[in-house]
Length: 156
Image 1 (cartoon, rainbow, N blue to C red):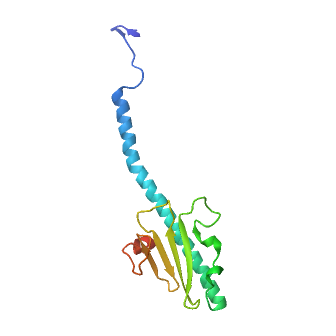
Image 2: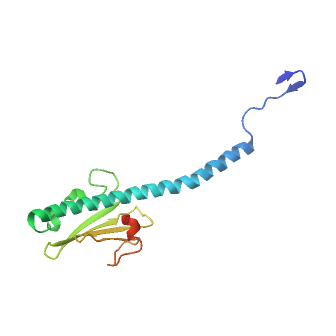
Image 3: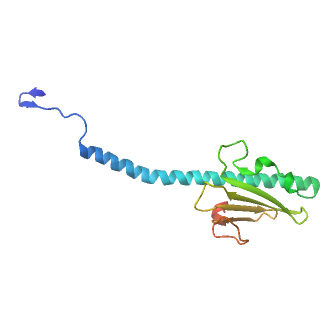
């Protein structure tokens, strides 16, 4: 109790229930905005990593073509470039990357497919071939046609 000329009164200590409820509501609103944004951020980062590894694989294949006038057989593709992130760079694999030589090793296709339990809402399959064509799919298979998400998945 505290007393002064006007009388004695009790000093309030702590927070009222309404103040605590306001804080809980504010934290809930921030979480509702922040968690989806963070998931989008992670998804974009994983997609960028997969695209970078596909392009690195394409560079390795083009270098081989420059030296040998043909792309390597499937067994000649570097094993470090068969997953995203690369082998040894992460504990969780988000994409499996498959190299398929074609037409007597004069063409190739690189396909990155999502790996469970990772399940983005879009860009589940990325494909790059020796002609420079880039396709993407929101399903787990590419049917040969470019989907509407190809431009957004490949950034252009």
